[in-house]
Amino acid sequence: MRKIVVDMQNFLFADSIATAFRNSDYEIDVIRTESPKDTVELCQVYKPFVLIMEVTGYIPWNLCERLKLRDEVKKMCPHCKIALIVDSNTERQAAIEIRDAKKNGFIVQFFYGSMTAEYLMDQIYAM
Image (tube, rainbow, N blue to C red):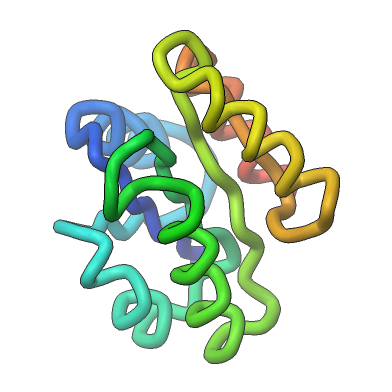
């Protein structure tokens, strides 16, 4: 079974992602972090094929901190794909910065928080 690690400030959204995968035909196990402090360790233990992190305007969820986590995870799990989620309505500047991070090759994919769980699952599966 393939694994993904989900590191999100919005616990309800993270829970809905995990529930959607559990109730789907995808053979993907979702591991949720309690805080960004757990992310690197969980990636080291579970070796996910994707790490999904939410970006907000606040530390420790801002883009700079997320890219630091990305670097640490990539050292241990070089094949782990990094995807970021942002609420493009409330975090407009972060959304622009994430788009540029994708353009510059720092992340594999980004998503807006306004998407459906089904769309997110399909995109993650396709990664």
